[in-house]
Image 1 (spheres, rainbow, N blue to C red):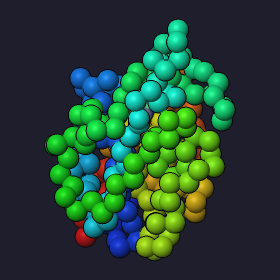
Image 2: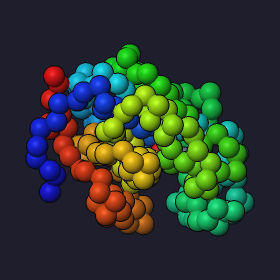
Image 3: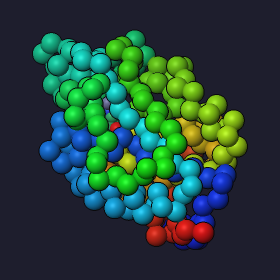
Length: 216
Ligand code: VGL
Ligand code: ZN
């Protein structure tokens, strides 16, 4: 059950829009079912937040997370990499390609920062904060702290990977963290959505609905 109270964003709040890129939208290389349905809620939310940042999945060709990089392996299988188990994906969000571009339907001209992630050929990064080795920082926690943000509101694709990992790391970095569920869609492979929702609740991340966010 989503928590019900109304939230009016202030200067201490920032909206994170995760990976709303063509490869994760219908017709894309790693299309998330219903991914296009979140664009209007995100546009409405963005209008209620003075501060917004975007993350952008941004892989070099031959990235370690691509099944095509591992002979004989297929997308959605897993492999063991130096930092642990990695789900293998179709080639997606290759740097400089159309699939890596943000949807042109997003209306967020006031977005203040774009965090690119997954650019190390050997390390994936679902989270906007920490790469999959769980050691290499993107700098986002420092940025948010230096600017005095206290609450982080997470939206985008996909709920069970990049949104969940970003929200969990935001919480671990000390931010009061919200996932706006109807402004996200999941990939849901091998029980990943159920696991992600469990982990988010356990970590104290608030799960809310976009209608709870009201412009000042
Ligand atoms: C994502 C799988 C691989 C995501 C990115 O944005 O959730 N998922 N790369
Ligand atoms: Zn990726």
